[in-house]
Length: 139
Image (cartoon, rainbow, N blue to C red; front, side, top):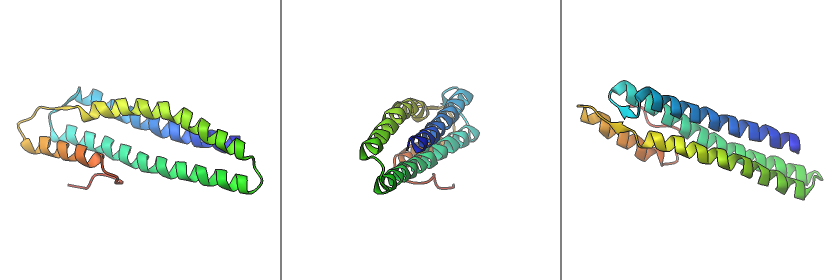
């Protein structure tokens, strides 16, 4: 069971680190300000990645629970399964909270452009980001 725990933790943490790096990249590239459609498209790509990885994380978590249930059903220790689930949560929770700080940077980007559609699209993206979906719709 420890092997599965390590694998699932590495995958979950790896996904979050990748998302954090993408969000940090976009924030640094824009210097905290959306000035053009190109900036907005970079923000959209970061949001899409975040949304996809959130769905994948949920699937990963459910899959991990299924693996633990199968392990217990085959005679594995219920205590070890519970401990594995606890460790998974303890390790991935702080990484997820760190990810929220990177997401907040994206959510608080300033929009400074003469094109009102860019500001409208950004606000729409932020609203849709809070909804359960695989990605933002294409324009």
